[in-house]
Length: 218
Image 1 (cartoon, rainbow, N blue to C red):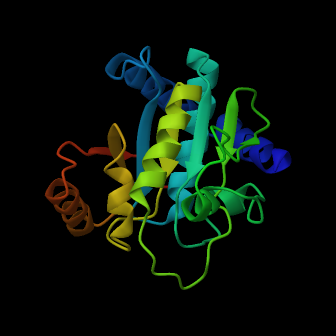
Image 2 (cartoon, one colour):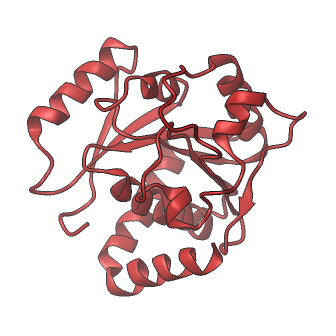
């Protein structure tokens, strides 16, 4: 897993320095808008163009939140369906315990099944053992407990889900976050899909979803 993260950061930071500056600036904006002195901030992210887009963005943002602000960061893979582009598979954590296990079993005290990344101060909570074909809903009680514990241990909790248009179960998850970010690709994301996702979010109580353009080369 460490080699995966190191190679990803090397690729993005060294060959796409403007992107690195963008995420550093985004880190400062997050610091300015969300006061985490009384507890950690939970931010949910999804892309309308696949999990790879959100994986790259979250890992870069986690890196910049830590190096720019000195923040302790947890990246949560809260997807209920597996994909190669998700954070867990990207980092070689497909077999590790994580979110799905917490959903089934609850937490053991305040212990989160996290894995340390190669960046000090950045931990990963993998997707866990996803049951293929499962249509079970999100256990909101266990989700809230997990996020409360995460907020108590980390300054920034970054939650990855897949598109809410693909599976409305993700609406339950993102509704528990302090803010929701919709990641779009320049000159690729369909405006119709973006409008539909914003309408769905607002209809479920997420009144101010942020839209972030992450570039057209992902």
